Image (cartoon, rainbow, N blue to C red):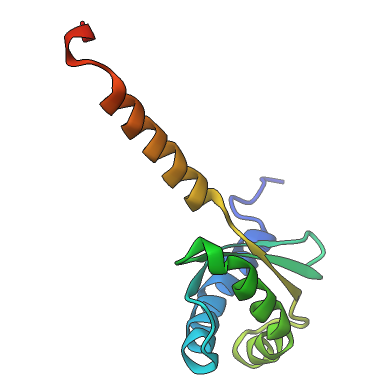
Length: 123
């Protein structure tokens, strides 16, 4: 039997990412939350849990944003149950995705290193 190219968890995760992106955007606007967006969703194999990775516009507000989103997770899950065709919507767990912060830090370090090298040493 040939294997499928896409797993069900990947398809459900992609759909959850699209739907949660809209819900989080509305929650930021309506509830006055720190500005954040959904970067990825990882769904467990049994579809019981979903880790929702979010990035914040201001990294210092990330803890408050994740805490507020975890508080609203029940409301998001209820809204998803009405908009998605799933028998059971996974339990949502919001986590902060610091990959963007790490990338910016590495970029700044590389720029500083390039500025620190004297122009006469280049070969």
